[in-house]
Length: 365
Image 1 (cartoon, one colour):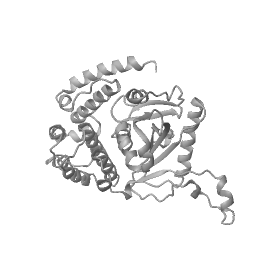
Image 2 (cartoon, rainbow, N blue to C red):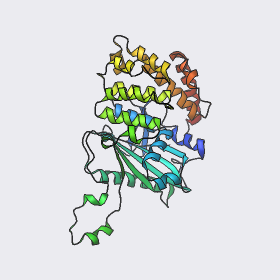
Image 3 (cartoon, rainbow, N blue to C red):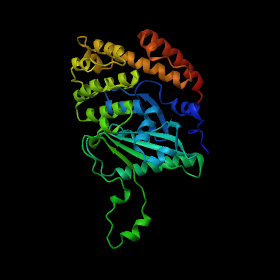
Image 4 (cartoon, helix red, strand yellow):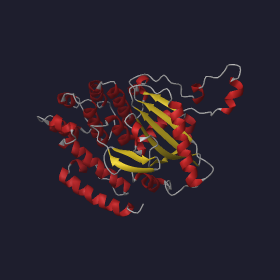
């Protein structure tokens, strides 16, 4: 397998670290390119771009990306993929002018011993784009051209997947050939000369994550994304209160804090008492979540939250940043119990130390 300097990968954990170190420098980040081939990494404010921020904060983590693809790609592909090799490739192929409505992530994974690229395009605009197959084909071609420049032939397969948040139902065919109006008497003769291409599609407006998703963390993420887009955050909170009581339920503290951050930015009118009530019967992670709720109930804290200054949210951000940098640097990850006991000052100091080591290790890359 030949890989160029930009996409050079290593096996296992080192391979994942190599391709993700430019991405997870902080909480809820977004890849904002000056051009498709010269990407820079910048923080994204969830209060400004909550849908995009949550999508990238969740699915830039190969663990959550793997859960998504395992649940929604064809079974033959899922069974032949070596999911431990899944890694994020830095960069974006969506033009900066379109990023408020579209976000994308590119991954590499070994399938039957060969490199395969998985391209996840997130649609969170209010209307369905009738030219989507054409646009996705353009992104795939650019990915392949970039790869070819760096590595030559053969090319890896690129599997494009469109995740549509809604709220409108997706009505556009994923088949590229359906964009053409071919004369009936010549269709059979013309079709061999047209690109044979389709993209996979998950339309959240027509899915039921609470029923269809089998993994607890993916179920939570997809249910929240679906209900947030239909402005039913209150419905999510009621669902979460019941879901968290289910026997065997397992969701990480960092994902819960991230999800509640998204809740409060997706619906700034949400009553903080609703947040507290949604946690009344939570048995797992109860103490840190209730601590967050109590901080948010303080008078005047909603305005501070919208501006990204909530102390509770800052604690969640700092914990996530510390644990992510520890993983990237292949250090022992601080346990959820231990990190919950650290103050904001202690967390920031730990982050400064890790960030300095990160900069030293990767400054020449």
